[in-house]
Image 1 (spheres, rainbow, N blue to C red):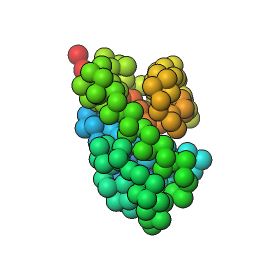
Image 2: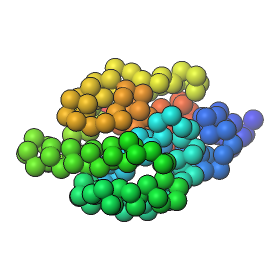
Image 3: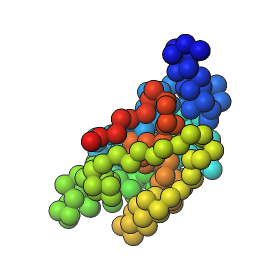
Image 4: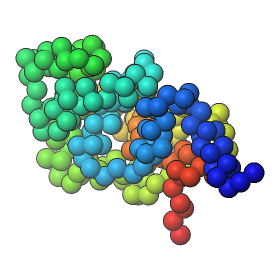
Length: 200
């Protein structure tokens, strides 16, 4: 078997959860488990994960553009200032999950982030999220998608702390998926060409 064939075979194995969906395949190859350090983007992924609760991730990815548009690009300051009129406008936007609690959650979470920064405890949301791993990416060594957990000790720790601070839609399962999305956790299979390289 050629090296190219082996790489393609490994990619297909690692992409198993994408189930052949082009949007999900592109997400796996180009975005999933890639470290993110931009506050607004970290907030965006938290909101997208909250929108996903009870639904498949493929639904969110297919409507991501519309959801981002509805929330004004997920600028933390703007979303934190949303009043009832603006929240109703978001609810009526095409592609947004029509769930009032999820929209309220995005606004509340934005306000919590601003409060955290204003307190001086954290300079940024990025600093807060990445402090749980001392700024390092956690690279798991998995040989099959079935080995990937739904939650772990880290996601439970982060979820507990976030809930204490007032964040909502931050259970340990959602947070595990969130930590993958923003690259704190890398769950690409060993041998997958998308996997991060271990640092010395």
